[in-house]
Image 1 (cartoon, helix red, strand yellow):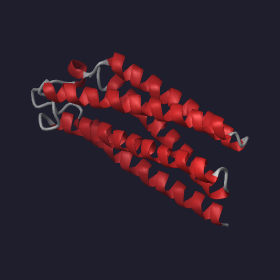
Image 2 (cartoon, helix red, strand yellow; image 1 turned 120 degrees about the vertical axis):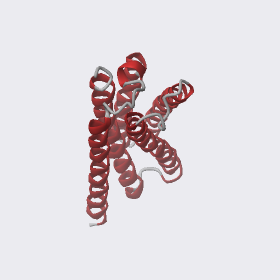
Image 3 (cartoon, one colour; image 1 turned 60 degrees about the horizontal axis):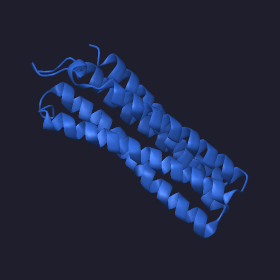
Length: 186
């Protein structure tokens, strides 16, 4: 019964996150042309970096799935290795995202420049905070696997982490599509 309650509660959390991101995407859609005479997405965004970030996160989704499979097979070394790769890929993604923010702000395109940039920074940084939370959670799960092995509680936490990680990857695909591909061309 506890597993079902945990899973249900976590699905409710994921739905609330979906609502949060839906609001942020709607805000970005409304404000993406509100540049106040400043630069637009077309002027600012590097598709090369966005492609690299996407490759990093999609690969991290694969390694996270492989870590979950290793857990299902009670392969602690494999699970920890794949979880470590997931962490490194996520950290590399976050580093690129922070570098992009730093460059935009240095170039005078910070969140205070226009409504467009405010909505961009809010959407992308909210996703980045979710990635950071996922990285911290990955560390916690790794420690739990080392200390407690494949107990039902650890497996439940790992399952929830895996769901979370895949959802933030799906959110990134939406960010990549609507912000960088479509928004960068308007």
